Amino acid sequence: MYYYDAVKNQHGLKHDPFKSIVAPRPIGWISSLDDDGKPNLAPYSFFNGVSDNPHIVMFSSQDRKDSAANIEKTGEFVCNLATWDLREQMNISSAMVPPDVNEFELAGLTEAACKVVSVPRVAESPIAMECKYLQTVLPTDIAGADAGVFVVFGQVVGIHIDESYIDDGMLDVPAIRTISRLGYMDYAVVDNLFTMGRPEVKNGKMVS
Ligand SMILES: Cc1cc2nc3c(=O)[nH]c(=O)nc-3n(C[C@H](O)[C@H](O)[C@H](O)COP(=O)(O)O)c2cc1C
Image 1 (cartoon, rainbow, N blue to C red):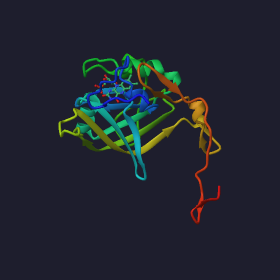
Image 2: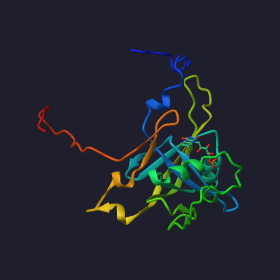
Image 3: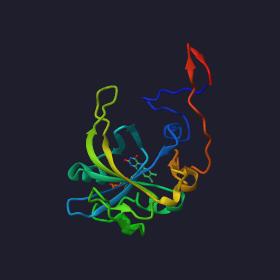
Image 4: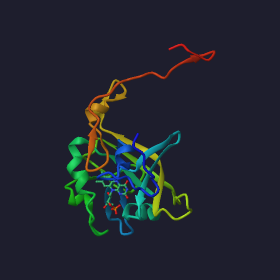
């Protein structure tokens, strides 16, 4: 087995493989509003759901970028789903632009009003989750040094779903073609799946 010290990070490879190992990562395509009510949109792949009751999501900002700063001030954000059809727009919205640039306009996307939060969702995205800000966690490393990372948590208060992707009361995820982030410049698209039930154990023995 190839082994390296991950703290020194002397991996000896062409590129740091960490983000190819923690993969695929869902993409939280985060919309927020700045102080002046101007929309902001950016993708975050250090993103996930951390609880389904209540529905809690998180994303991690390396440095306090505009999304994190906006959300901490306004208390609201939206997680839009990034899909194969929207891959180019998602990528454009990651451009390093000044805070006053509206990435919806930059990427040619439409702002749609939400129900509970004032933040617009991406109209073209088949799914959007309206969120209320909960807290920001600032991790330290094992030496106790500030990691420079801002992990923003929010509770989902409303979910929009394009009804054409609901089949017999279930989401047709391969039809939605959700994209996820791998390492390097790589992405994956969910276009097939397999199903597997949880094991049942009785008297310490597997029964199915
Ligand atoms: C697919 C993708 C995933 C990204 N994930 C993250 C992430 O998890 N954390 C982060 O800090 N930046 C991430 N970025 C970079 C941000 O999107 C980029 O810095 C953006 O300009 C931040 O915008 P904001 O300052 O408006 O929040 C990602 C970029 C792409 C294309």
